[in-house]
Length: 172
Image 1 (cartoon, rainbow, N blue to C red):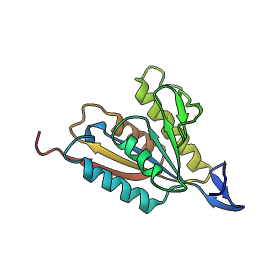
Image 2 (image 1 turned 90 degrees about the horizontal axis):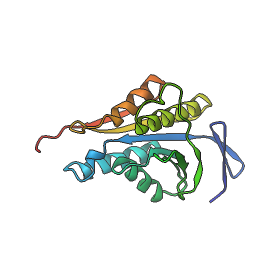
Image 3 (image 1 turned 135 degrees about the vertical axis):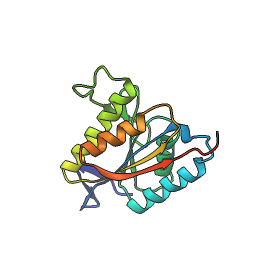
Image 4 (image 1 turned 45 degrees about the vertical axis):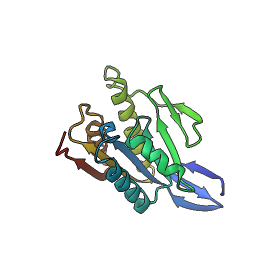
């Protein structure tokens, strides 16, 4: 595989310039172990395959975040940026690259929401620099946390396009 160097939303592979394709994945941890897990994994894999990203961005939670990382591991030539709650951004080899920035106005929010805001802001900046960006969200309607919808709303507010898949639990 050729070395890649990210330069302002563009990648150079083997001397050939190409536009970066970034898929930001967010999702409800409540899907993990639910009756919808297999369906949610399949929908995520199909969406990611169809979009054909050069880079996937996700958090470090279980469920959809972990499934996105698994998809990257099984797909040759796709990079990964994991925004972890320890403040680090990691690549597909679990190497810490840097810290994610705490954005002004988010300092008093819970750490996962700070992380989500930073992940969205940095991805939107890559779009501004020319990257093609899509957001893919898997939302469990019964989830007691609001992280997925927070990330989805922040992404939409920054002009990122994407798809929200909502799972309704019919039996508990």
